[in-house]
Image (tube, rainbow, N blue to C red; front, side):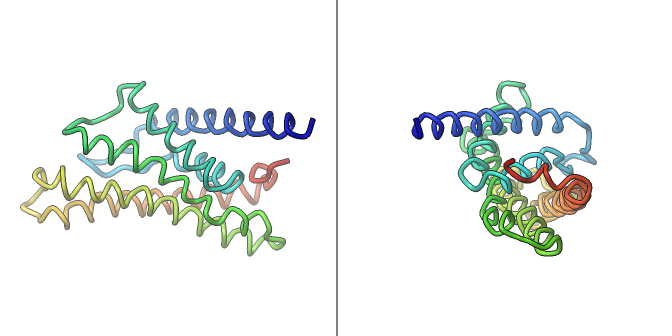
Length: 188
């Protein structure tokens, strides 16, 4: 009986992760792009909550589903197979790296400690994801760099700026949500 309960629990966590990935994809349709490459990724909000709540592996898997949903919805930009693999199959799961601090976040007894781990998770997940967008920007998109910038500087400005803006917006939203409804972040 215990094994059956564990199996159904894993299924529920997986279904929850798929729903979170779908919500992240829906939020991706809200226009936040400025110029050719700068964007704030609102999908990081639900994915970070899920990763903090459920841990690293479920967060990575939910991020992978989010990446695959870009294919299903036709929301990919294709230059080459390796570019698509980096930007959708590697980068999006990395958003789940916020789950690295899940145990510390969930074990926090003080609001101040919880918020510290929440913000740490936001920045870890966002940095991990946008690092791979930065790599793709240097390797694949650098030839389109504006104003004669080097590919590294161009990718750092665009992807670094997008990552920082995404992390700040996500941290603000999650801090507000945590203060309004901390139950949202816990398993029960």
